[in-house]
Image (cartoon, rainbow, N blue to C red; front, side, top):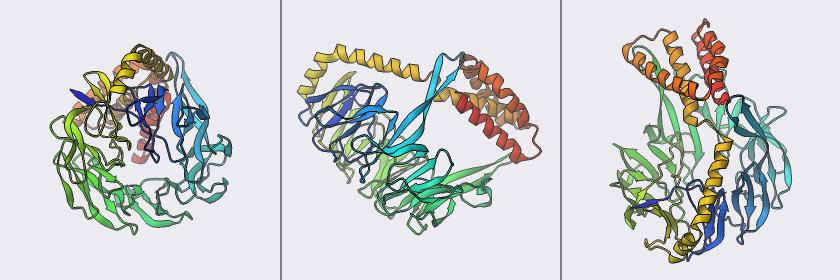
Length: 491
């Protein structure tokens, strides 16, 4: 059995000459169209080469850029990097804040606190003075949050403020000049049917008023994935649900919000969007009509070469825009769709690069195939010759990863569920099924606490006790949010 390999790919305009390949957790390198390794796999992470001839890589826990000869164009010295925008500036991060906790084995994580922008020589053009930042958009604006003042809005390529407004938090601008933005209200008004997401223009003014539960970037066809709130009222509690659809630049629903979270991806450049109905995936066009009927158990968005990963019976291959197999379903997909709130995220697999090659696994053996499904002998020979050396590199990278973080995301969630369970029991939700559910979640949380962080238990106990002392539901909910937030910070 052959498995499509799950690997990390940076965004950016890919070049045709070279494509990246890599192992689970690294190392990564580059091959040409013949499958010959032209840049040795020495990188923690490797991105595709952009039109400027540079590829973003991570080496020994730092980010930099290399040229097509594998030489450093910008040395790996940054804590965070994004590909260069069309104005020749790249988002870069510096000055990481290391998080330590006594009894947790030392360093358990880190976060980058300072962001700025560099030029093609690796020099700071806009000094790192932001706590959060997006890359420059096609309209020449970058959305940022300033560290010293707390101002948030958009700047130009000289680092000058174009607009700032602490009441809104925009995301990056789409090609049409609109950016999804969240209205920072003191309390969310979704229960009253009022959304808190909309779209702002390059001046920071609302182009589409806030009335959405969530909003995402506009695609090339002028449609954006968005959701609106639906209030579900049950006997013991009420819950706000999301339904996803697509809007136009006027904020009008073109495809009504009928999709559940995770059941729809945004439109690709070819004008097709992947959606799921009755547990099967297919593709619709901008009118919401089926172009490829829902018959797949696994699909990705379409890649730059016009193909998409697809699977029907557990084995996968590649399909074209007609839904026809261009690479027969002979491979077993090892990744899974990345469906964060319905965003247009491709699976963590390379698929086929623009030069027609794909990185796969065959019975535990790393190989490369072309668009005909044929294996590349030159690559097989390289891997066989350097297998022992590559295995050492894998172990070194795994050791680096273990030193940077000792607590998994699942453990953090477990601890949060533990406190949430106690909160619900504290408030007297003694309906039978919530009670059983909370007992299970609390048990899961206890495992996380006594395995990883007994200190966190005692630190959070006073906050939990305050949770039940509020006179209003809003105060109690705020206290619960504080508990969850502290969990994430501590772990």
